[in-house]
Length: 200
Image (cartoon, rainbow, N blue to C red; front, side):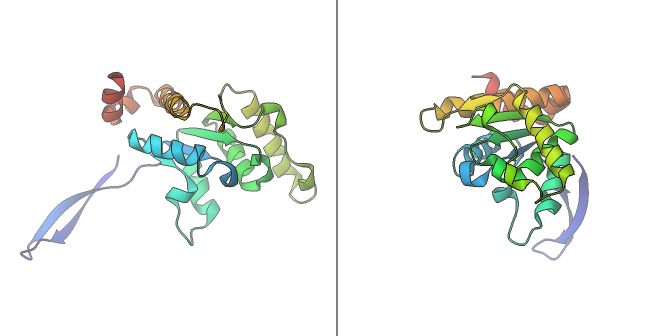
């Protein structure tokens, strides 16, 4: 974590030095189809990870009106350690969802797929896009989807599933992958999470 010093005047007008910390990149990028999962799976997982002391990125939480999508999202993906791809029924209808997934795969991020109300076999780049976008993009999307479909992930049924169990399992999977990616360095920086979850 980078640290820098700045000066400010206290109530008495004297110059004092205070420490500020530059916010590090996010730990976890949550890739999702907003219309399907922003208000349930993705939003709840974001809050769960935040309460656990992690630094997740979710567009609706980390961006403000006026931000350029690719200017914020692409650096967040490149800076994250682990990605969570929440794959849902309308996921493949979104260019942005597939772009994010492809970028995570191309950056060789550790990606945890969450098959939410959908089977892997039901996920495919939609035919209506042929000719609408460059062929290179569509091939990137197909390759990323195939890689996600053949990666061990989590499944969840939003109507009948156990929400508490799902959020606990998803958070545990994220932490396990973060530790595998960063090792002891991650544990040192997240003593709060490690201490509290070892009691459970």
